[in-house]
Amino acid sequence: MKIAVIGTGYVGLVTGTCLAETGNDVLCIDIDKNKVEQMQSGKVPIYEPHLDVLFERNIKANRLKFSTSLEEGLEHGDIVFLALPTPEDEDGSADLKYILGVANQIGKLIKGYKVIVDKSTVPVGTSEKVKAAIAKNATVDFDVVSNPEFLREGFAVDDFLKPERIVVGSSSEKAIKLMEKLYKPYVRSGNPIIVMDEKSAELTKYASNAFLAAKITFMNEIANFCEKVGADVDKVRIGMGTDSRIGKRFLFPGIGYGGSCFPKDVKALHKSGKDSNYNFQILDAVINVNARQKLVLIPKIENHFNNNLKGKNIAVWGLAFKPETDDIREAPALYMIDSLLESGANITAFDPEAMPNVKRKLGDKIKYADGMYNALENADALVICTEWSIFRTPDIDKMKANMQNNIIFDGRNLYDVKDIENEGFTYISIGR
Ligand SMILES: NC(=O)C1=CN([C@@H]2O[C@H](COP(=O)(O)OP(=O)(O)OC[C@H]3O[C@@H](n4cnc5c(N)ncnc54)[C@H](O)[C@@H]3O)[C@@H](O)[C@H]2O)C=CC1
Ligand SMILES: O=C(O)[C@H]1O[C@H](OP(=O)(O)OP(=O)(O)OC[C@H]2O[C@@H](n3ccc(=O)[nH]c3=O)[C@H](O)[C@@H]2O)[C@H](O)[C@@H](O)[C@@H]1O
Image 1 (cartoon, rainbow, N blue to C red):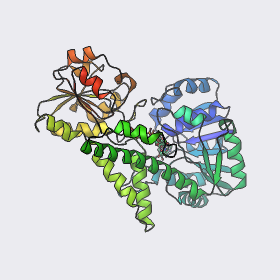
Image 2 (image 1 turned 90 degrees about the vertical axis):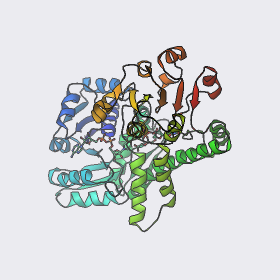
Image 3 (image 1 turned 120 degrees about the vertical axis):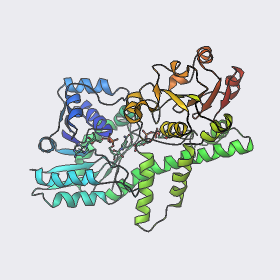
Image 4 (image 1 turned 135 degrees about the vertical axis):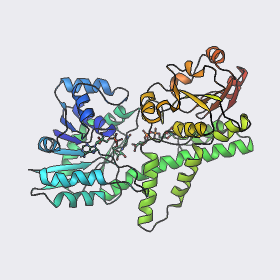
C-alpha cells in the first residue's frame, strides 16, 4: 500500500519504518529540513534499539523515502498518517496547532480519496475538528481515522511490529477495511485490531497512559509510606504483583515518571475533564504526587550533607527519562540536577546515549564524563537517576577508587541494600 507519514519524529519514524518493513511504499514528510536531509543520507536521527537495521534495509529496498513537501506526501499516500506533536499548552491542554495546521493544508492539497489517520495523542473530539478543517477546503472525498499509538520508547520497533492491540476508531466501513488490510501482517499472533468510534479511540489512549501513570504514582506513594513505617517496597511490590489482577509491570517506584507523554497526557486528560465540567480528582493527585516524587531524593541528600551542598561534587548516572533512549523530555534527572545546582553543588554526569541532548539544553552548567567511572572522580556522592543496565553490576573497586565518599543515592533501586552496604557504601534508595 502507498503510505505517507506526516511528521517524522519518534512515532512518525518508527511508524514509517515499520510499515515499510511489511512491504508498503512509505514516504515520510517532515518540516525540519536538516532532519530530512539526515534521513535521506541514511542516518537515523534518534537512538532507538533495532531501528537502524530496519531503516537501512527499507531505504535500500526503496520502500522508505523522505521529503519536506506535504504536497508530495499527499500525492503519494492513499493512507496518510499524522504523527505530529501535541505538546502541552500553557493551560495543560494538548496544543492542536500542528494537527489542525496540517489538516487545513490537506484539504487544499488532496486530489483523490484519502484516509487521514491520526496517530498523535489527541483529546476526544479532535477527529471531528480534523474532519471539519479538511472539509473546509477539500473538493474530494476523504475519511478520518483515529489510530492511537501505544509504543514505548526503547521497545518501539517490537511494540509496533508485534502490538498487543491496535485501536482503530472510525465510522467509515471503507476506511476500516483499509486499516485492517494494512495492519493484518502485524496481528498474526492473534492480538486484536479493536474497532470503535473515533471518540472512544481517542480516549482509550489517554485512559491507558493516565492509568499507567497512576499505577506508578500509587507505588511511589506506597514506597514513601514504606520509609515511614520500616517496610520494604521491593517485597511489597512482589507480594502485590503476583496477584494477576494487579500484575507485575509498572509497579517500580522511583523518582517519578517522565518522558514526552505521561506528564503531558495526564495533564491534558485532566484539562479535558475540566472543559467538560468533570473534575478528575485522581489525576489531580497523580500530577501533584509525581511533581513531588521527582525531587524525593533532594531532602535525603541535603540531610546527609547537613543542608550544605555548596561546592559538593555530585556524580549523576543516567540522564534520559528511562533506559534505552536518548530522550530527555521531562526526565526526572534534569529536575534533580536543577535543584542540586541551585544548592551550589557541582555536577558531573554520565549517560550512555542522552549526553548530546543534555549538552544542548544545559551547556556547561554541568560537566560530562566520557564513562560511568570517570563521572565518579572526586565525587562526594553518586546519584542514580536512570536504570541503564550497565549501572546494575558496576565494578565496585573502581567506584571506590574514584569516589571521595562512598555514598549512593539511588532513585531507581538498582542494588540490594545489604549487598551494597556490605561493600562499604552508605546507600539511600526509595521505599527501603
Ligand atoms: N514519543 C513516543 O513514545 C510516543 C508519542 N506519541 C504521540 O505521538 C505524537 C508525536 O510524538 P513524537 O513522535 O514523540 O513527536 P516528535 O516531537 O518526536 O516529532 C514530531 C515531528 O513532527 C515534525 N513536524 C512538526 N510540524 C510539522 C509539519 N507541519 N509538517 C511536517 N512535520 C512537522 C517535527 O519536525 C518532528 O520531527 C504526539 O502526539 C505524542 O503524544 C504516542 C505514542 C508514543
Ligand atoms: O504515549 C506514549 O508516548 C507512550 O508512553 C509510555 O511509554 P514511554 O513514555 O516510552 O515509557 P514508559 O516505559 O511507559 O515509562 C514512562 C515513565 O514511567 C517511569 N516508570 C515506568 C514503569 C515503572 O514501573 N516505574 C516508573 O517509574 C519510567 O521511568 C518513565 O519515566 C507508554 O508506556 C506507552 O504505551 C505510550 O505509547
